[in-house]
Length: 227
Ligand code: CDP
Ligand code: CDP
Image (cartoon, rainbow, N blue to C red):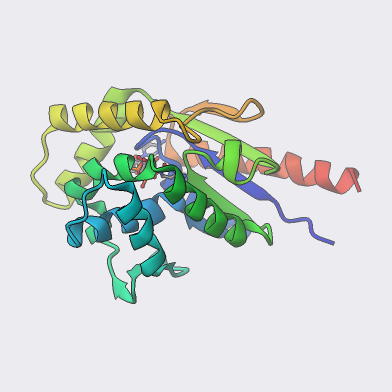
């Protein structure tokens, strides 16, 4: 019998999804799946091949021509080449929402993601995991934080890496991406009705992780009792 859960973590950019999802997965011995990295990999490849992101047919055809693999250490491979750093550039970040708004791109990505989540024992983060990819996930979390705090987090990450960083520009970009992700027609960023919302603005990573682990523990007990 399978006591393992599917844990869906959604929310806007820099709310802390991937940081916390990785820690939760580590604690539980689950697999972490970063769906944003899949959309980012396609976007990186589309830009590299100078395909117009507004040409939906070409973008979808391109998705069928490439392979995207993510190993257990979160190294991302595009056609066997390591693109882990390349998919986080500002250029990719500013085009990814347009690529992710294409209905046929989402259909294919969701198929791949559902296959990865089939066996449970997964923590998956993204925008539509609780609403669309794993609607029957036992745990659904919606992480939010103020725009100011989220921009500061990205700004600090950039500074730590020694990159040039403009806080106001980050804020503008985050707002624009939130808007596109929330307003697109196909599975927009939205809290699932049965998701638990956590505002991480003034919470530590440890505190958010602990809250999610407690929620997961309750869900596990419930799963046992329901048997
Ligand atoms: O880490 P960050 O919040 O910057 O973004 P991400 O999780 O890497 O996702 C990048 C982009 O991919 C998002 O802004 C969405 O446009 C898209 N995405 C999506 O549409 N659906 C998902 N399940 C995951 C990401
Ligand atoms: O995946 P998502 O874009 O939602 O966020 P992330 O890539 O995990 O980035 C969040 C950043 O905020 C990281 O630098 C974390 O160290 C930091 N942070 C956090 O994740 N959670 C908090 N409660 C506080 C800070």
